[in-house]
Length: 374
Image (cartoon, rainbow, N blue to C red; front, top):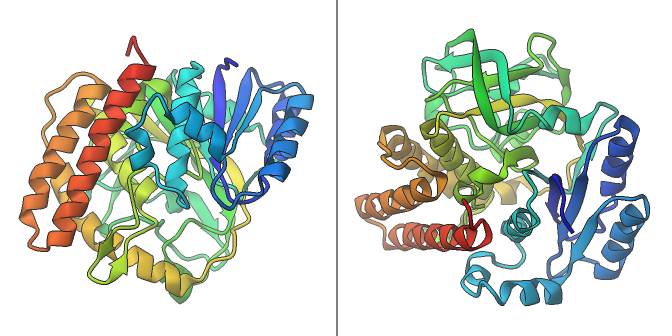
């Protein structure tokens, strides 16, 4: 199986939402787009296989990977098994590698509660790999809030999950028209916003629509934003810098979670800037029919992510990269994390950052093997 673009999803449910994406692609005459679904321990495998077979029957390339098929594929990369734990969203990393091996030039990662709308989903993500001239935002704080592009049901402003608390309510934006090569595009969402548990508990919010001022914007070099894996497309060349970070470490009596995609987004933005390429944010919009969440439980899992994010962004903003390719850039950042860990007194944090740095090295080595010509 070979494809130009590939949707990658990991789920513990029957991935019926992919039928909507297949219909969207058929309706809009989208080019060669395939599907890879990575199952987990509790995924209903028979139902998932039938769903993917139904998509294949419509003429699309589609593959469901249950646990035995994943283990078989991973025999060639035994170290990867140790950095993609079960029962986590981190499993999508396997799908990223599989898509790259099938030579997909654009990899589109979605969550299993984000549904396609009537608009042309692929058209907007197809900006990846192309030069584009767009309104480009520079922020006085170095950070852009994607939720400023969305209209809330209460008319107020919210911030997305992962936006550093120290950077909130401090930004002033300047927009200019610039041209750049797009390496990653993050689409946004209506209905349930991808906000942190604090927001969901204190200020319950729905997203009504996208505002009409900008359909898609470009981030200037040095301007960051949280990048999630709900509705994001990236070019295969950045894959060596786009590992979904390990979570579930025990820190101070609490488990850290829900920041794996956020931290991977921070790192990939730094790498894309170094390579003089660009990140865009805006369309396509998906309908986020959020799976059931216990927001107090989410808050417990997000607390260490909030704390460590403040230290990670300070380090990342100051980090001077020397390399000129995505493979070596990620190795540089892994080495930088090894040094950052020494600034923490807590043994558990030092060990956790060491594990992340090790996983990043394994990731680069595996990408080298799969993407032989870089």
